[in-house]
Structure formats: C-alpha cells, structure tokens
Length: 104
Image (tube, rainbow, N blue to C red; front, side, top):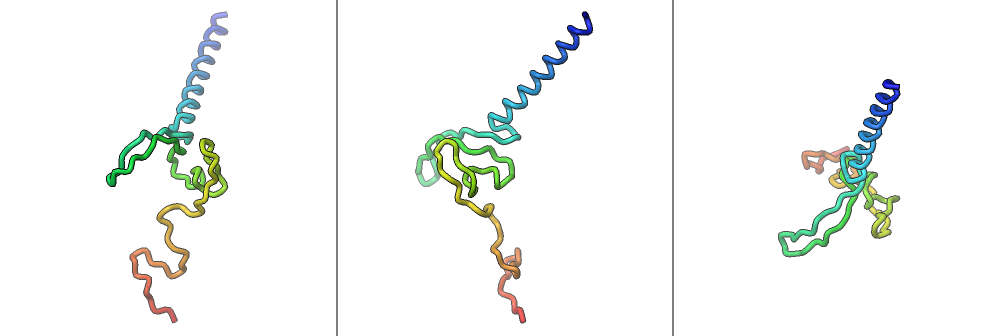
C-alpha cells in the first residue's frame, strides 16, 4: 500500500511538471505560442495599439505574416515569402557590397 501511495504521488508530480511546461509554451515561452504586446509610442509620435503576435522562435514559417498562415485574431492571411534581410536572388551577390564585377 505504501508503494502505491508513493507511485501516485510521483505520478502527480510528473503531471504537474508537464502541465506547467505546456502552459509556459501556450503563454509564449520558448516553445512558441502567442505574445501580447503592450501599446507604445514610436519616436515619430505614432501610437501603436496593444496587440498579439506569434512568439519569436527563429523560424520564419511560424509567423502569422508568412504566406500560407492566418492570423487567428484578425483572420488576415500572411503574405511574406522570404525572411527579412535575405540577400537578393543574384548568383553573383557579394555580401561585402561589391556587386559590380566584370563577368566574361
């Protein structure tokens, strides 16, 4: 009987930890989810209303603005097809900025 009680206690601890991890992810923790952004004023005086966005995770395809995704709050479909700061589609592109080469 004592072993059974210990087993149930250990099992409850495991489920509590798993539940806490899932809540963290759902609240915008490292696992993704949504993040609430507070309203703020830009340097030019424009006020940005509070809003929700997808949590940053470094994956371009996990963003509501990416083509094929839909913002669950506004219903707006994503339109972006390439990540920001992607170099131009030029086989002679030079990241040093020297793109004017003589190719024969």
